[in-house]
Length: 77
Image 1 (cartoon, one colour):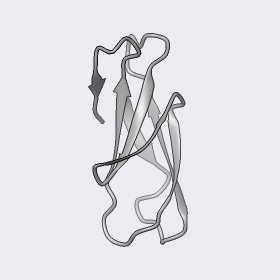
Image 2 (cartoon, one colour):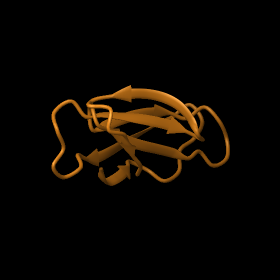
Image 3 (cartoon, helix red, strand yellow):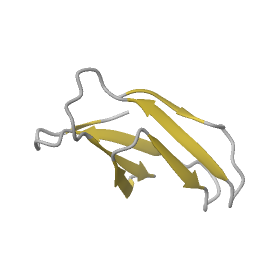
Image 4 (cartoon, one colour):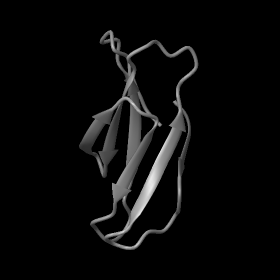
């Protein structure tokens, strides 16, 4: 997965931010993306964007992993 971006670097509690990324090169059909917030799983999706509503103060670290549908594994952002 390439070029993980967000709509803003600073968000107030209760406000939203959107993350976007580009599919990894040579991606096979059916790739899914696991989204984690501060190390905890949030969702799995097939789209290349995720809208998050911020609910905690301080630093929130989002990680997106692209996962091969054939069970080969996942890679990180």
